[in-house]
Length: 216
Ligand code: GTP
Ligand code: MG
Image 1 (spheres, rainbow, N blue to C red):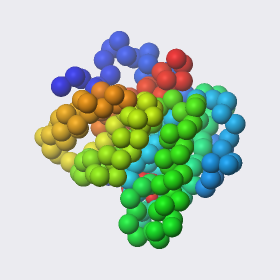
Image 2 (cartoon, rainbow, N blue to C red):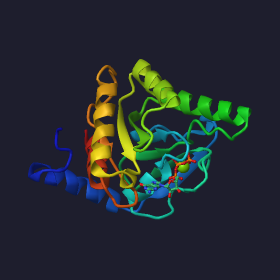
Image 3 (cartoon, protein in one colour):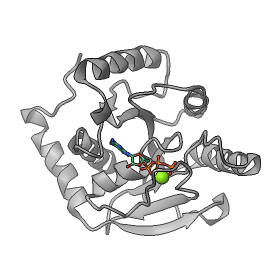
């Protein structure tokens, strides 16, 4: 397995990530429709995935603030596209989750449309982090999202969440399964990041990657 942990040569990238996320981040706007998106002036990094996978928690871990993005034990917490920014650099987009079975059919349809239209059509969207619960792996609705991103040639990377819930051998198994699933996906970044918003696993690395994307 390629070592995903930062080596000595990466220390300047880690530092750039630390600096970007040491800035104060703030909420810019939330919108349930594509009609009210912010002006596409900065690059955007979106966090997508099933309901309750931990999108908002991961954003809070990145920015080091407990409640910048609102989180909840019950699925369906984030109901709009929420944009966050520091005083410079990229925007971070927290998305509603897909696959929330208990929402009304209309709501599911509206959210799915919003998520897919944004992912497919946003010109300044530089990278999508597609979050997968480390315990559950890729589900059908994840596959639909991956298909859409591949088709639209939107660069994405898989992030495993809640890695603290698995023992290291089980985590290694799921990482291997994911790597195999990604081989034939053209828009997928080949490396997968295992994270935990609770222990901080993978957060430093993700910060470094986002800073690198912003500096490209
Ligand atoms: P929606 O907005 O409803 O789509 O959910 P979300 O993907 O934003 O998930 P959210 O961040 O609200 O987290 C859902 C639940 O998972 C909360 O109870 C979090 O505390 C929990 N959670 C998130 N990340 C982690 C993690 O790394 N480890 C553990 N153990 N729990 C986590
Ligand atoms: Mg959320």
